[in-house]
Amino acid sequence: MTTPILEIDNLICGYDGQAVIKDISMSLQRGSVVGLVGPNGHGKTTLLRAISGLIKLSSGSIRFKGEPVHRMDANQIVSKGIVHIPQGDLVFSEMTVEENLLMGAYLPAAHARRQERLNYVQGLFPKLKERATQIASGLSGGERRMLGVGRALMSSSELLLIDEPSLGLAPIIIDHIYEVIKALKTEGRTLLVVEENASRLVDIAEKIYLLDDGHIIWDGQGDDLLNDEVLMSTYLGG
Amino acid sequence: METVTLVILSGLTLGAMYALSAIGLSLIWGALGMLNMAHGSFLAIGGYSCYAIMIYFGLPALLAIPFAIVAGGIVGFLFYVVIVKYMFHHPAFETNIIIATIGLAILSENVILKLFGAYPFKQPLTVGGGFRIGEIFVPYQNLIIIAVSVMMAVGVATFLNRSRTGRAIRATALNQDAALLMGVPIRKVFAQLMVASGALAAVSGVMLSSITTLSPTMGDAPMTKAFVIVAVAGLRNVYGAFYAAFILGMFEATMQFSLGVRFAFPAMMLLVVFTLILRPYGIFGRETVTRN
Image (cartoon, rainbow over all chains, first blue to last red; front, side, top):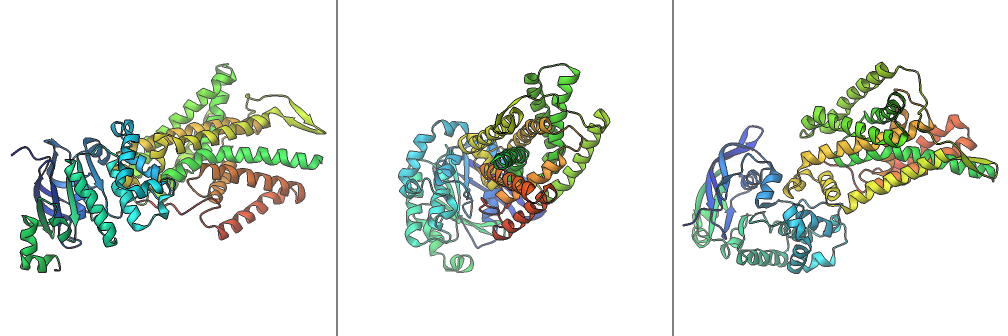
């Protein structure tokens, strides 16, 4: 067993002194895909925001490749190799698709290889090449998601945090996004994927954590979760 | 024919002065959502720095302008260190910063008053001479002001649109969280923008005072016009502010000659009100500023 790429110990955090994450510990092995599922409003997004440094911890620690990162600013954490694809995509609405992608390669290491990265991302998402000079606010929901994912892949990240990649999209586009996620896995990147729809994760995730009310209440293999009728009907509406 | 030439010259000069006043303001209003009520003081500080270095140190104009630029940049940086740094995280930043910069504007105005007195000076940096188009005398000074305003607008717009740092500034303006997640050090971006805004305002102040006079309140009227121009143009659009400055300058000059000087500014404001009723985000604006 090698050292995990990400280790979270006794994490507590939230907003305005109100804890949303109430003592979570978990770890991710390098090159694995880990799923985070659970009902809405129970801390999945908050956990990702804490890892990427958008919110500060109340207590606990987060280590990336053995180094504590929880006191760093979000932009420093990115430079360590953790890239967060937030919910709602947060594309830069008044910039073109290509400018959005180039923002993904803002940091010096990625900037030096931006043309190579651009070709790679446009290969994964040909739509982003077709629409390169369009203003991002004119994109459809599916195209925005592709841009959100593509922009993150412009960086030289090792760990990707993806918040609800399938939210609000047509099934055919969800399939496309998940094909890309699979491709990233075969490239050896580590992924932490938040989903409401657990069945989407079963094929690709080595491990799934079930989050409820700020606690991890179950972890294990995807198939075991899908076969557990009590867990599924209580927490995942199915 | 002469009247037309005169109106065009006057309109272009006014437009250039407005553009000069608006560029530094537009940069941080658009990018940081920061309405800097001390922008007029920035203009005055630039003008007085140039004056001081030429009069007290006897340095030539070519050295005085870089000095004024450095002084403006330092003042911008001080604004960042003293207030912006502590305020920009808060959701009420956009309102709080207006109050805070009004305070700093009053302070700077009184410091200038204390140092130089209330008597208006002539800016020693002037270029004499000119040429004639028919009966109309065209001073070189006016042409220089027009040229500097064009160079500043093109320079700032090119920097924002083409460079890596410029892109990061625009990204920060659109969505701070997303910019952070791309690795943009937004605190550094804020500091850089304040320095740039102070430096640009200093050049503008030197130019404005070379055609009018130096006084502690010399920046107030140009700042008011600059607010109007940026609002009419729409935020986050340097070229928009530049075009709006010249459109309004030409309009004001035309009104001055047809209705009289007294009614030119009210007529311009009327035009502005109608524009904003029809295009609430400005002529070139896409949407309002939202801070996330």
